Image (cartoon, rainbow, N blue to C red; front, side, top):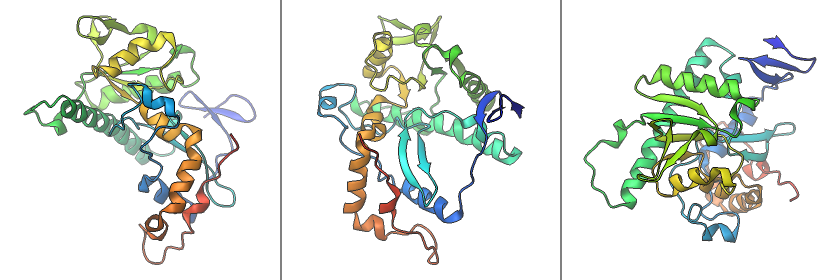
Length: 282
């Protein structure tokens, strides 16, 4: 671990703040139960005007790849944010060889799962009858995309993740790009990097609804479904927009089944998960 200053070091060449806390077992069980329940998934977007946007109005079955759940853990876990484009996975690669292998495998499995779910959804929308086994489908190309990507604090992490994709799946080419590196081909409405068609984008941009001018080619490709975009703006509006936190709390309070359920053994003493939401003032 390379020291940067008295509080920040580097893990895998990624800035990493010292003072990492490890949560106790009971808090971890509460967090695990909350995430596995998927009660945080909402059917409707945060804003009414989102329903007028063709990219945002439909509830889709993919687009949540690499979401991060941010908790304050003093006095029990309190959810403060669901992050749509979370970084920092490389820190998890540094703790042990076993953890390193597990994280790499899960990352690539997540890529494949998202792609397959999206392709099933696209096919169903078009009423296509495709004999191909979706469970065997893989993208030929994946682009990890962020604005001014080489200037990003997590650029080296993105490079590392691209290497992991190529290491685990030799038939997939992976790139780390800025939006301007991608060009829309008007003949097939697909995105290309040089002469290579991009099948999937791991989206690290902070333009969560893709409204900025330099992202319109990516928006168009996502709309016409020539690229699998994940995390997807659609899921930001239904999950990560902070205006949804109060709605998630209401959903929990209204769910008797959720609060009575227990995914652990009968001796688990997990407290009610109504406490897990700490909704900030907006």
